Amino acid sequence: MSDSLSNRGLPLTTRGALVLAAFATALAFSIILPDLPSRIAAVSGFDDPATISRHTGLMTAAYTAAIFVSAPFLGRISDGWGRRPVLVLGLAGFSTSLMLFELAGDLLLLYTARALAGVSAAAITPVALATVGDWSPDDGWRARRFAWIGAATMIGFMVGPLLGGTLSILSSKQAQFEAGAPLFWPIVLALVSACVIARTVPVSKRPSSSHANAYALRGADDQRTSKSLLVLAAIVAGSVAAFDVHLALRGNLGSSASGLTIGLMLAECSAVMLLAQTLVFSPLVPPKATRWLIAPALGLLGLALALASAATTAAALALGVGAIATAAGIAAPIITYWTSLIAGEHQGEDLGRWIAVTSLGQAVGSAAAGLLLSHGLSNVMFAIASALALAGMIIAAWLPKRLA
Image 1 (cartoon, helix red, strand yellow):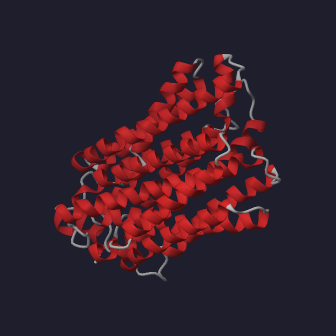
Image 2 (cartoon, helix red, strand yellow):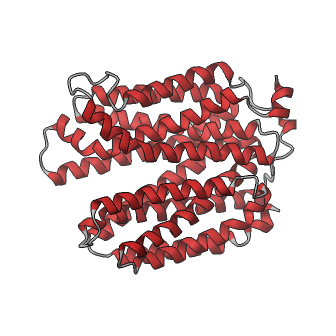
Image 3 (cartoon, helix red, strand yellow):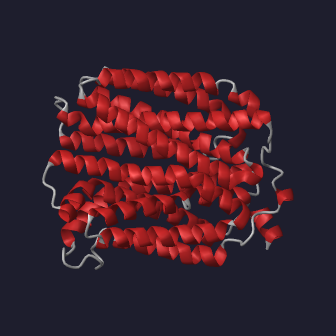
């Protein structure tokens, strides 16, 4: 089986299960987040908006903190113990966390459910990517399968709010687990993917000798390169998260943009990122050449953020959204791909660090943007995000030579 997989990569059924697992994780997160304040109010009895907002922030932070703390550790376990058991346990834990969230009758259980969801999510997407990295017969195969998982995650974030809103209307409040309940579907998808993974993912990792295509640069140079990629991942995630918060709150900041317009722009952001990622990892772009795109993409991100700060019309803002999404859609998946490529035998650990710093970047970016915007300092937010992106471009400028 190992020789066959080494030549062909993982079979279609296994790849589909890994993609489904990433989709279910993103879908559940995007279904829960918009309705989290009302859920907190329902189980706590609080009616003070400030108190509900505080718990919403803390509960979201609990999810992010759980990912940040546990992802590198779980990735290291998957390096030594094997991908399959970590994936199966992660998906089972994620399903359990969603059930607990639906059944929770007090704040403590809600916090427990979100923390468990974070720990479980840390065992899913990065380990799924590590599994693909282990059994990639060539770099092009790895790049395209990474793109599939990234696309599934992006689609999950896009579909979640729409599905959650629609099914919430159709479902009965008394029957939370009937087919119309929003979290019913992520639970089912996670359990289905866990069953398929348990049957099809190899017990052991790919043999060490078959990592010939990996950029196994372990040592001082590789450590510097890996850390640089992690810094860039955090910058991209934080900048996009900060801009998304600005976009979501724009209607409350004296803007003439309607809620529908802002919603369409958020959808545009996700759709453009998905398209950019798909094109970057298409047969049109040699995988090794992608290392040259990181610095230009970060430069574009910095300039787009600066231009977006000056947008005064919906058309100008839409143009800025497209530029920011294009830059992030190019940079983020390439950074992930090269993190995997240079990891060698440390796929799980390094990709665990990647999702940890990405989650941290999102949390810091969102929190900082919310704080600055609440004090009317939107220009300061844009200036900081733009400066970080341009600093990232400078850091990325020497990466192609290091990765050659």
